[in-house]
Length: 103
Image (cartoon, rainbow, N blue to C red; front, side, top):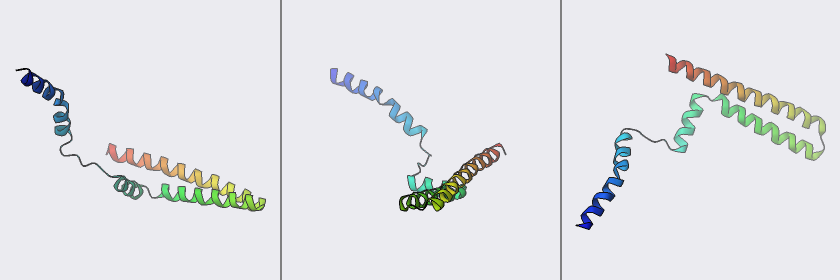
């Protein structure tokens, strides 16, 4: 009789599992790569701006290491511009998504 009670208690403890399965029955979970591709296709300017920022930073640091201060300063200014472009692209993407959800 005590075994039945233990089994009943353990099944009651697992009610949340069944509830969770029922709740997420029709939901498809995205993998990292699927989400990345979706986000890039929604707003392709952000990855381009990020890539431009990384390239400008890398070239600026390389030129600083080599002693070419003029080019290093130019690339650091280009990095700031690329970062500004990336942030503006993100804000524009947020605004477009918010506008799309209102309609």
